[in-house]
Length: 464
Image (cartoon, rainbow, N blue to C red):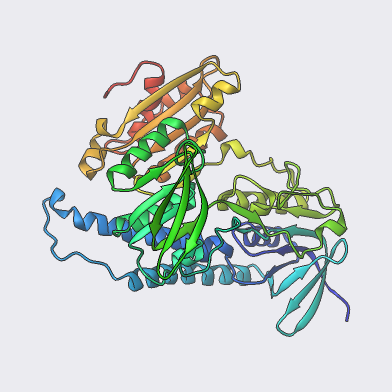
């Protein structure tokens, strides 16, 4: 049987793949997308979206337990873990159904199955009904990534969990160990700690949230400890002894190994790209540490073959994948899009307190040779933050002292994941300190702190 021919085939229907497919279809191209599991990928089904639903439940639970602080009364506050999880799964299902609708609306052909690339421009897809052969001049790889598992720390779904198990927990952990304090680890630590788990976080680096600015990490750690978490930095889990209903973790700190007992462990030690079984090596695609090597336009070096999103490396963020998908689709259609700039992509962590950042940290800016001006403004100096009952937090900005360029912005506190986009737009427009200073921020809003932080960098802060 002759292969079905398309202009573009996208392998993977996560936030990179389905967006690339839709944009290519909008540009008049004949498009197919191949997905082996769920439309929406990890993000919509097992990542970004369901975790935010869980964290929202934890946030409401926290507020209910602090109702007295707002002049309200709430007695007998409790939670139903099964109902919390059911809501989370319902949110994910609603959005994945929406992806199917969008693909259909844009006349994208969806093929459910496992794809391999037997030759350039060819795809062989194993489906429930057999093998389907597809062909296209342009193929976009958007196969995503999965949880990294370290030897001896492998998940079993009972005592040791990955993010998937943590999203559908068989029980509420009483004593929880989270290995890794990146966004995934610290979000689950925040969720379970808020609901009452005795939570310990182990981080091999010298601080939690190690990719963030050092001041922000320190502020967040202080908040986590205040909430009852145990934070172990410069620490490594060397071994897990699994027994009946318990895990003994051998944790090394300062050259000494101590044993700690837990009933549940969540492993969040990074991700690996889904590069296996595609036939990439035979095509001459270069793979480095489970990620496809590309240029700034996501080209693999093999004519007509592109890689976007998590499979193409850091930053491993859904919005980066989506933007790369749009860029590649427009390039295939004959456009001349700008390449995605990793340093202008915001990172957001939805723990309590939230953390968000874009651009260079103060330390990285200095390492790069910049003479910097740094501004800071605390939440306690902002009327809206106090009215919300959220006075704990900080906004920090880093500028090039010579040009006034906004090099980076870093935040910790309530709703900072919604505010960071202001600075992202600023960096995209190559905004200087003068532009930001002359912008009128509405009052009373949390965003006023963004203004004050800029003013502070130039010794002009008004409210602190």
